[in-house]
Image (cartoon, rainbow, N blue to C red; front, side, top):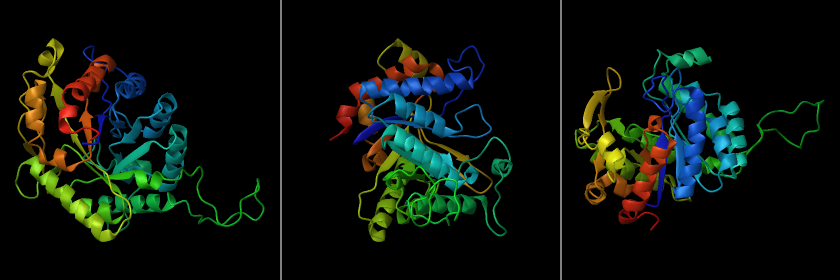
Length: 341
């Protein structure tokens, strides 16, 4: 396990029990938590993107703000739903945020997940062409986005431009060199993990995946990672890919931890349905004293296969407590898991 970061869904609610009662609270606290995580020595600050929900949505202003206030920590998403995205506009936003951060962006993208509204991407002006699905549309958007990130010109310049142009065909600006190699695909199945490998994207695998064999979640996820790496090798890419997995992990080191998570009953996988046809397995949560936690995590085959672990944090409990959650893992658990070896 080389890197450990956090993943926040950015929930907010006006409830008095929540420390994030508005969108402004969530955005500003996300910046503060990233700064705190960097000070603690964490490797990454990642954020989920959901539309039509009281959660984080448009990621690039947030990523740019974090990039301007931090210096070393990786800044990413897990994941951006490509059904909603204009690939060229996204390339401009991503290029700008990456340049502000000094090349620290790690963008997780995917075909999306079940939503708050029916076919929400239609309201954003997108719809699949006849005979294709919304998943097909997401993959088309992704391939266009990846092509644009190569930095090659393709647009015919105006012969009488307002400002002088460089020679040749033009590309969206700003372009950030190296960002193409820091794009990750959030794969829900073995097949999409293989597809991501062929296109040269890193792999993000979350706390759920399609139930393809009926085996425990961590075993299926480990199989997915191995299939991805085999496909990567077969594709002949020159660099070594990165693979992350997400987990809810809480070290019980004080009374607050025991009050919040000591009575957790999420210590086994769950089965559910993402839609009428897709049966999914949801991975268990981990909450225990550090020594027991280390023993449990060492039995998780997918964590052993990955190089990056993203800790899903309960952002509504506030910055101070979430910084404590991250610190507890980094201090009491991570060294025994081979962190940064």
